[in-house]
Amino acid sequence: MSTHAEKAKKLFLNGYNCSQSVLLAFSDVTGLDDKTAFKISSSFGGGMGRLREVCGAVSGMFMVAGLIFSTDVLTTNNDKINHYTLIQNLAKEFKEKNGSIICRELLSGNIKVDSSPNAEIRTDEYYKKRPCADLVYDCAEIIDRYIQAK
Image (cartoon, rainbow, N blue to C red; front, side, top):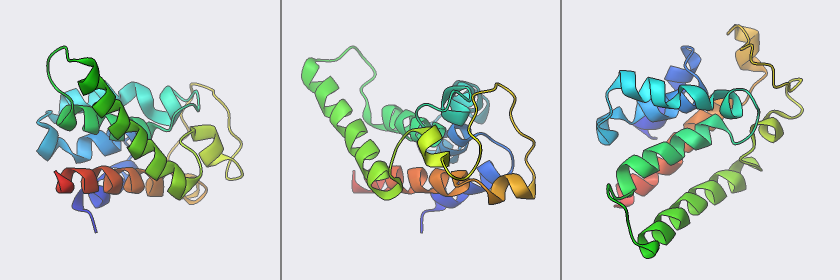
């Protein structure tokens, strides 16, 4: 069981958006302070500002990967290829487990999906009808395995 995954799920259940939950859970390995991580990932919740596009948890996972595995200077094409290969592998693993990396598809059948900018109030009912806490957990667990392997 991943400590980061448990932390990410707990953050989500405490009201952080899906992207924030994943990125903040890894502050011990990314070196980002919580305020910066919170702000950087704030726009990616709800599939990017509730547009229901790429899952915010997946975006958070990609941010963690960039902070840990990317170089910090303009790189060669091979460096980009290697990093993008990692990102595609992370997406593939998530998609194999959950069926998609797209927020509206992940929520399909659970709730009426809209792209209103109005975030819903977090209630017990809110959490019962969404897979998001588990998706946040999955993303943190996936990237944690890659970190442990390095």
